[in-house]
Image 1 (spheres, each protein chain N blue to C red):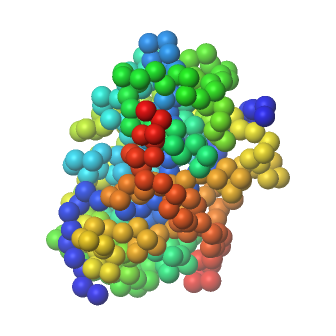
Image 2 (cartoon, each protein chain N blue to C red):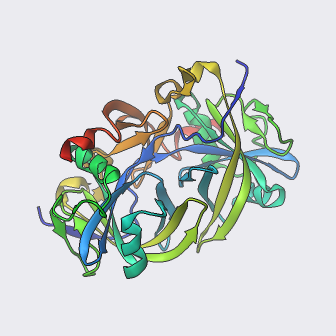
Length: 186
Length: 186
């Protein structure tokens, strides 16, 4: 089939979804992000692109700490809500049960299968977003999300986001083992 | 349920998968990455974390150009292979049908539903990886992956990668419209 050259501003791949938590003006606030990923293994560093005007970003800049929470499909409406409304206009502090780990400045979401306590590793200004590099200090989960002591993505039951259609999807069938199926081509 | 504090080096969320293409010592080479995402909308900038010793990274540093190719499930074995073997040891230049767009220095994969021509926007050194920020110059696809002129994730049929179990999964059922389902909570 012939290739079509299309506009470069596309991102048609499944993106993970997380809810970022931070204290802003002494109140927990939450915003949803999809432009993020892990970037370094040891120490664990993740990168998150956040709109420069985001209210949550004020808290991240002020405290240098925040949380990343991975929601499951039961939280899809609240996660979407946190991506629609700003903490500047609406008090989102009561939307979830909030818990704290080692740091008083890091509100985390009890309903989420996984919550990460983060400290700012670096902040990089991009043209229209701010790339926050976060060192993960601790992770919090529950026994129900583990299999043989390890986090189990099927039990976590996360969802992904796609553009440009702006849809959420569950994770489907497991189709292959990574670092394994390709060995047949050696 | 009580929260358990676990080791912070976890990443149990569905990660997208891409195959990076670059000329290294004048030969196309391909490597698979999962630690990447879009980071800025306009201009379109993506960030990819690549192991510092990766052979492909030599080509990216030398040419300042490379490609990002989104594979579908039909390419899962080749994508996995590109994440297992290094171009230092194996010639991967014949693994795919290679095509070129505007830039002679950017080999792209014909079999992939989407290929992006990229120029290095910035390079940031992290402790064990190199974060390559890429400006997307052009995107190439085929008619069969479009619906009403827009890329259609169901037609693209990509897959995601999970850790720590190291599995690949297809994208499952569409469960909600983003920027929509959350409005009910307003």
